[in-house]
Length: 298
Image 1 (tube, rainbow, N blue to C red):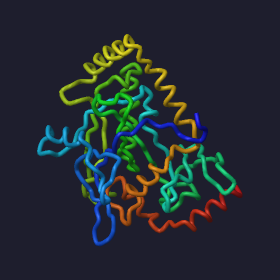
Image 2: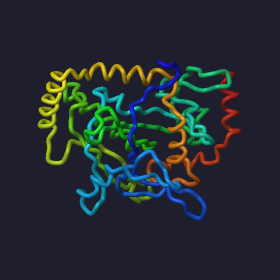
Image 3: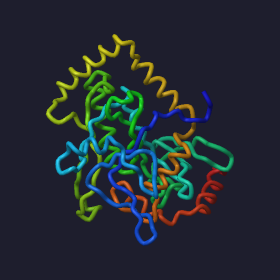
Image 4: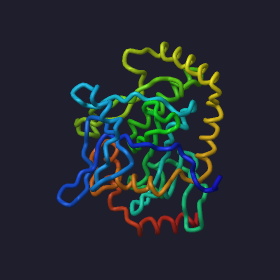
């Protein structure tokens, strides 16, 4: 295996709760109250809609895609959702510092260093709203490719916190059979004082409509037994996924860098997963160089 290259789940498409539109020569995020599933291909600056989007939308009330039936690839919750505090270089979308609130890996002029991570509110390096939570959720949609996934990227606290809790809970109550539970992503909305009482949307993970946790656990048990009889080794898949993520300092690729710039750093910020970038919108390349130089002396 090539060292320094994160081996991540194969991605077939993207899941978003908004889109970027061009207005007056600027590319701006547009809020939405539904999911959109796209391919990884753009034409004339627009992501091409994935056939799964059209298929699910036909069965959705008013053609509004607010739930997506999914399954997880791994039994380990933390392999399906990776979330860390991340500071991106806003000129190219690459991660500069990634931490978990205790320790971080920071790219400095002398290489990648392991340093204490006090969290974004107390970190001198990430002050000014530059450091934010960044989550990547990989899910399976349909059975066309049992190892292929669709990715949902978010910097929203609500989505990350809710998804992390749900995944851990389902893993626990199912007896570590998370990958065999039929679940669904569900879009939820709420108003807060921070949003000035305007609706913000976040992503939840629930059992499928009409099902209970108990019935899905029974289905997960049956599914696990059937896969084991077929020779499918879920534990080995989890271990392969874990080693793949650990094969590099940062879970990063050039493709993801472009997606980060498109989704999180257009000329203005709009929805729940973009609002938090507004405070640091003036962060430029020279600022990164100054902070990297200073952190190299720590």
